[in-house]
Image (cartoon, rainbow, N blue to C red; front, side, top):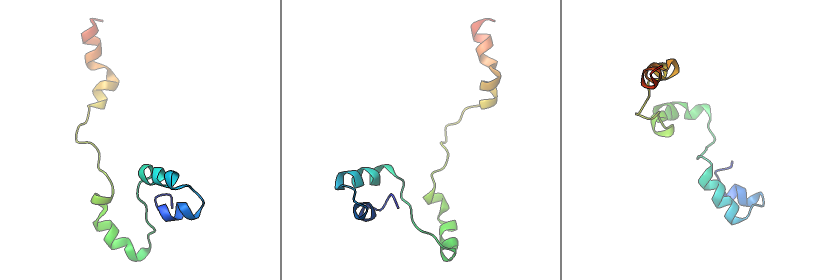
Length: 72
């Protein structure tokens, strides 16, 4: 598992490389069917939700304001 520093060291990576991967790779864990209920209940804390700031993609794709602003 790339987020487990000791595993990376056991594989022969340097401490600096293991630290770099620990920072860059999201935390992972082995799961089993016994964990299903706990993980399902904690899914909102485990996975980041979408940004609260959204854009109106339909309007952007249609270019509604772009044409009016350019005078075309």
